[in-house]
Amino acid sequence: MNSNGLTDYSQLEGYIIQRHISQILDLGVSHIVWQDPLEKGIEIDIKFPSETIVQVWKWHSTDMGWADWSEYLAYVTGLGHKAILSSCWYLNLISYGEDWIDYYQCDPHNFEGSEEQKSLVLGGETTFWAEYIDETNLHSRIWPRASAVAEKLWSQTTDSVPDARHRLDQHRCNMIKYSYKSFKIPMRGFQAAPVFNGFCPVERVS
Image (cartoon, rainbow, N blue to C red; front, side, top):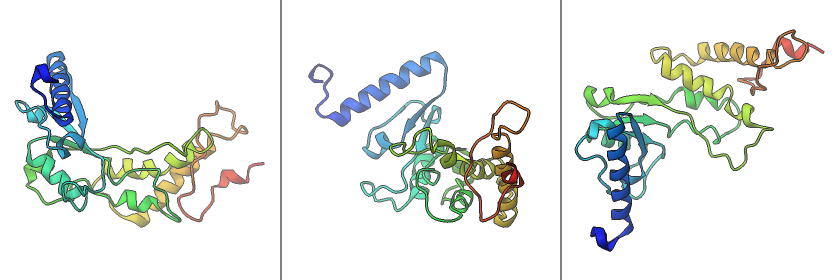
């Protein structure tokens, strides 16, 4: 650190990030960084900010004074960075009932910013912390919640929760349908969690 004129770990982190970004740019490939370096005041990719994609994953930032992800997304795009949102799509944050609705109603363009800023939002990505997830509950945690996010990102003009409820329910039934051994095809389905208090006809198969 001393030989490079670095006096604290934030400077060290900035040095490493800048070095990695420079190497990646030389390879001609895209790169993504978490929002954390920016929160610490570390400048990333000073020369080519539009080449650095920032993944916004925190719901809020008490350190920077942002109330929620929308304020941070406005900040990131205001710097000229492209962005990916994950804050409202953490699949491990499960609550009772139709929790998929919260995922479905999150709009990554719902922040105060110019149209140019909103055009820098590339989309979103579902994520989760996996401390309490293993092979016994992996699929039921992911599906069909991730399906709700996928529809929102791919069909942003479609926002009717009642309509989505029935589409996702049918999609869920198809997922579990192909996980039953009674079907004469390779098992390739998932034990997806219920969308609401309905049932799938295939569940009657003995």
